[in-house]
Figure (cartoon, rainbow, N blue to C red):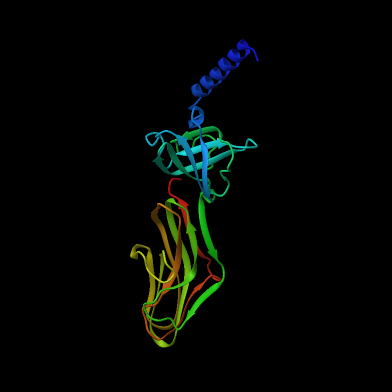
Length: 260
């Protein structure tokens, strides 16, 4: 290659970068082609990438990311965490149900602070994790005040989430008396972690009771992924059984990305 050819290619490359920067905000996307984005790790569906320098002033949780890797597929992510570990900025990304960040070169990186830059999918079903139980799960002779994990569990990735649950609870006893049942979402299979996410149904007298319990809109901020359990208990003695009736109503735990 001659010096003139090399110079021509360098000029063309520079002009291409200028064109990209001039068109950076088309559709709400801002070009980051001047930065070197590198795959840094994976904990599906959460991923991390590194960028040289301290860019914590530029990137923050909630921003959208668009990039390409091998094969040319356009991938979208939501930034759920940003930190600086010298000499690199580390972005934590959530890819939802559709997008994985592979350990391969990243090209054409873009970011956006807009809610819906061009092409970014807003279908909530793509940006959530959930657990659905369709079978009955019961605890015979439950001890009053003791929590039992009969509603399943859900692994929630790092980031901000709007958490909800819905299920049908049934409680029975051999002879008429007070009946109650509680449900909670906890970090352990045998406890109540936060009364804000506990619900209750009850009647003053009877031998059986069944009803729906639900919680919606609880915001959860996680620095690392965690497992959450849908537990139940009764506050009454002499109870024959307590159960989640998944065959009647799916026992659902759902977490929707809070940055959507």
